[in-house]
Image (cartoon, rainbow, N blue to C red; front, side, top):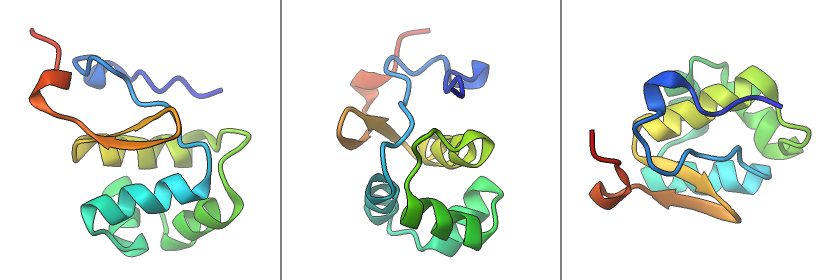
Length: 96
């Protein structure tokens, strides 16, 4: 399984879990108003990869591609939590 706690993101009090299915990726995109093309651009993936993971889900965890999508969402203030996706607030950021 891919370790989602990348060093540059350890300041987040609640590290993001990987999405459980393609619907969670779609929900995260919707919160940001992103298309599949937007997510592909922000994550460095091809649009076909984003489409694949949304259609086929992410179990078993999709390795590098899913990690890159998760990191793109975290760069824009979204984290995956048990059963969904949430916007981070200032209260979610650990001091120091």
